[in-house]
Image (cartoon, rainbow, N blue to C red; front, side, top):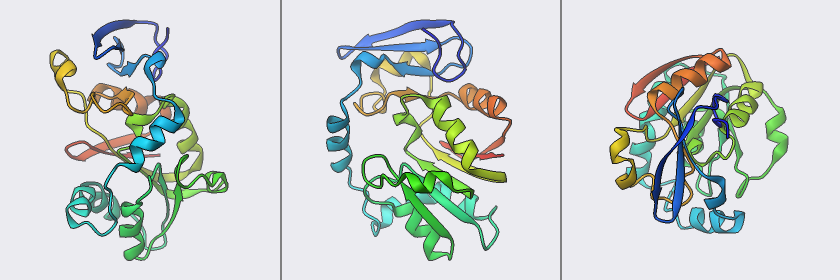
Length: 209
């Protein structure tokens, strides 16, 4: 078995709990749920439909502002974006639209319009999305193909903390979460893709192509 991010063969079993198995890469510290324990597509969609991501919920918008504000500060007025993995309630896209930016939507369950994946974008957002990637590096390469030179990818996810706490971590226990990233994983992804990056807020990454 190879790492789903960096391709290294140095993978070790780190947890068997809740009838699930997790693997950790010794090179980039990426942790993945064994594919045998992934939800089916219908089960996954059912879980997402239970999420309460109301576009008009002020607390949710405040949560998204951790990414929205630092990314918006880097954009030109005419920038065009894509909310990749936007879910059923694309609140972040709405926040950018309110500021005058054009934003397309893509989600394999709720906005499955692959036409938007053939376009070029000044910025792409993935909020609470990359932890759902079955094939992370494949998805990052797809995003790279859509980003213009000097374009931005804004990501929000919970970073891994101390490995010994992984078994009790609430984020791991979400059955739709299959991919877990450490700061080292982010560094390796940036290096592989030829991107630079910064971490403007806790659990937020801004990559630049």
